[in-house]
Length: 409
Image (cartoon, rainbow, N blue to C red; front, side, top):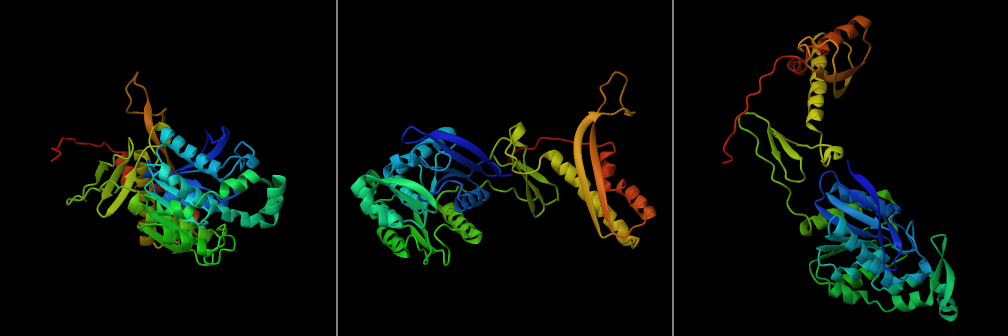
């Protein structure tokens, strides 16, 4: 299963920044870095939804709180757009040192402006995507326009943003006025995807037009239709994530391991994918599955373990056998559910064990739920039939496995 890890790294001003690393099933196909919107945090719904959707596409995604925001240390009043860019670069350096260099940058609102500005300093970046990004960083002052004169006069002022109070200083205004993002977009050496809502009331759609015109090809624009600026609607956030993942795959993701061809004689083919120490493709006719080991033993948990498949085979065979019998006997069996768990233990009644030999056996605990208007005699008979399923018989019978080496050609 996809998983999330809390991590920390040192930001531009020397403070400890809080982050989450979202990891996909299996080894990451690529790494992405997400920058949140102005005065937001890494845990805003849009950030979490987009990050988790990207992990489903194979990306590992780092999202972090800028200095002074969310769970990160520091005073927001001491930050500015330049320090945000440096925080972003620090996050990229942390990823490169500890996990993998980011190939995809995703930025929301002012975070979108930051990824455009930072991309030129990150040679690992192969694609940049923005959501509701302004064409100039100074645009953020529109959110507290009535306080700008007071900030310039007094050097600082308290402003309310999204219902929260922040201290904005004159140095913040001076710094943000010096960033020309259209120039940065024109100098991008990476493909650019611009997502923007035509009804965005915070950052107008004209900003998307300016960035798109400034950028060189390859560049793409996707309308988010009636979405609001913060992508509060789950459908909007997931749509944006799906578009980003699909678009970025062309520029970022390498082709996955080739799936082996099905065997003409009907044998099951298992071949390593080389995406991690244990992951394998399992091909049975037209069906392609993945087998792996849990993280606890060094795998990536990208699929069931071998014993997981064995338990599944016993459970599936049990269910199918009961269904066949119930159909043939016209029993009122509505549904079968089988829970199967495997373990190794000591058997007190191991007749096949020799004296002095350790009595370790494989134990399959099988629990069956029978739904339907069955009487006790019918339920008892179905329990007997469960022990007659072919896989059950195979597991209880002597098994011969013949193994030979074949030339890899």
